[in-house]
Amino acid sequence: MQLTITPRSPKSRSFPITLDFVGSPADVTVDQVQAAIAKKFPKYYPDRQRLTVEKVALEAGKTLADFGLKDGDSVAFKDLGPQISWRTVFLIEYGGPLVLHPLVYYLPKLFYGQTFEHSWMQTVTYWMVMLHFLKREYETVFVHRFSHGTMPFSNVFKNSAHYHLLSGLNLAYWVYGPWNAAGTKLAERSDALVYGCIALYIFAELSNFHTHVTLRNLRPPGTRVRKIPRGYGFDLVSCPNYFFETLSWLAVSILTLSWSAHLFFVVAVGQMYIWAVKKHKGYRKEFSDYPRGRKSMFPLIA
Image (cartoon, rainbow, N blue to C red; front, top):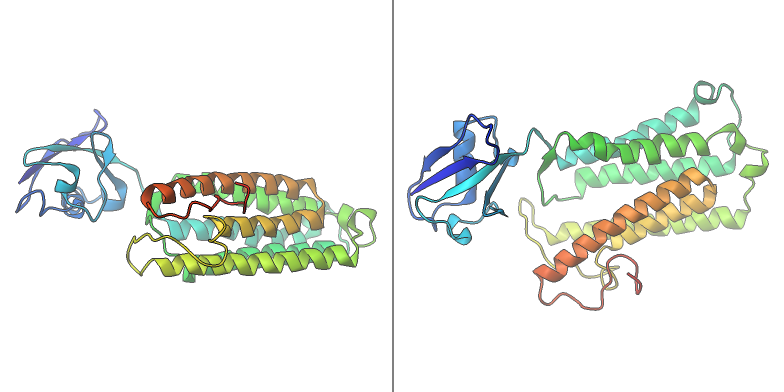
């Protein structure tokens, strides 16, 4: 069969092209089409391609017949630009705070022009943040299985700003400053408050890790299989991982009583809620037997 690849952009010099395949549309997969384009134009590797027919994206793993395509039909091609793996993106994002927090914490002379003794609150906060992002890096390498292999490289800078600036430089500078140093009024915290925040943080981090392992076990290695997640946390909400992360940052926010921590908390929770609602709707659309009683992110609320 023959398939014509037309450009989404009228400025393209590489397209249109016509590809020949052996067999009927039911025998030819989207993967084969992408491989044929990449063979003809090596810079357009499959992850860089977006193929559509009447604005419907062609999904890898399906045949042309699944999209109603026939011999002689055409599909539109869009270049998504240079790509980077999601795993690499996450490592870059979470790496920012892991570099910035030690710099600000251990080099106060550089950032504040003076040296001072850190308060208990500052030290506890430092290790909360460091352990959180070390855990995230560990999960990125050893736990997460990504349904999407890559993203446009240009998005790295936008995505990283959230972590490098808000939870990195912003949080570190305002929490570890001399105004919160040992002996200052702003740094005074009761033992009950500190230990309460530590307990909430540990519970939230362990619970968050548990939900990530649950999600990992739903998807066999090397596949994009999707199933209904069940078990700890998932009986109440679709995205308990976001809910438990909310509790982690709530502990940091309460412990520091810093506007910088409050700002990051509001922005982070707002973004996670948007993601949770999108995933919740996706689950309900994809699975007809999806539990009706589940909320998106906050148990019994929303």
